[in-house]
Length: 514
Image (cartoon, rainbow, N blue to C red; front, side, top):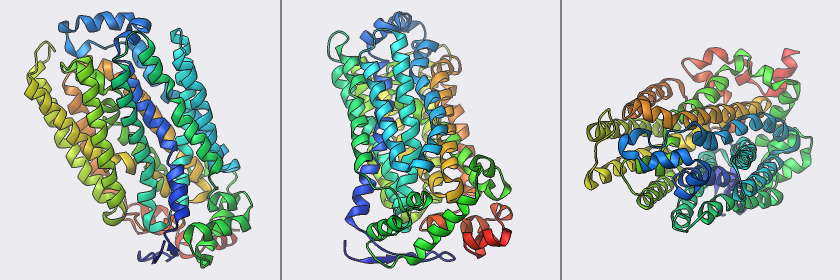
């Protein structure tokens, strides 16, 4: 692609690059890793609202749903049903810790391949499930796949993308997640109209399609220059860097990658080193960002949307249609982040999105409280129900251009190479742990907290918006190996970053410390 660019961020090195077809293609294919996570998020809630599926595996929930007039808030309350959804995230948590070693030793692409393969096997178990045991085994295998993919794909995209467009390319992962959700909700809408058990089997079994896509993608993708250097393939790394940057003038960036790799080789125990004070900013952010992302309440909307809409009085078909609409809104609004994140920065989107989510969540809580009260026995009219759906869409839009994509982008770009795999593993593990908690507890919390649940999540959105305003420095346009300069300049985090980490190259710093 014609035209060269130079990073102009003050205080950091400036790299020359061109937007090449290769970097577009590799990042596009790499983002496929988000499809498996998105498909599962979208398919689970729809399947658990299908009557044949509930009647087959969860007859108690099916009976309670038929008697929903007793208490709308509690119609789907079942620990076994939530275990079906949430078991995946425990498996993803565990696998992400192992995936960090695979990613570091064998490269990002093979971690992606393993993720696709285990997800494929899990989809087969679920599609042919004859009992709850098969369902749970399938969910665990799906979780292993999600853990490997979510650990490796954001790092891959951040390392392949040029600094000034890293946000846009990395957000491709979130676009793939949301696209997977939308496709899943469309499939659920049509399979729910099929008679018998064939509908939910098709929905669960078709998870093999995105799994195959990520496996094929991983086989054809090149590895990142960072990973090649880390594993000793220096010449191949330089050629790859020249190829994706569209210029032979990559010496400065290549030397930064070499320096970062030399420093990372001195770190024998990244899990131990990430606890050192100099990595305190990265450790705190890779823990708090995924923690806050799940406490926005988004996954309540995502994988329980059909259940939630039925709770509001929608029929089964209408609830799936409403879930599909919110998914499409989320997909379209994610592109807002793609085109603005490298222009306006991460902080602006975090703060604006947080304010939008806060207002809409409070409004949803008030409306549901007025219509159903504490007893959960009221009725909601068509116009009011449509207004709730509109408020949910506003909430989803705010998440889609802020915490959705940035929750994966920022943790993947802020850590130096020597702790990057460990930091991303922590990011995924924390994300999956709190996804598990929200998935496991939501239906029970809805039953007991009622409309107050939306105020519960709104409170955390308020806290996280203040936190990001005070604690997150702007990282747009900063080369990934130059991020220490950003932390050093921050009013709070600067005290943890030693001067030599900013004023000299990584290799020089190692020599000085020796």
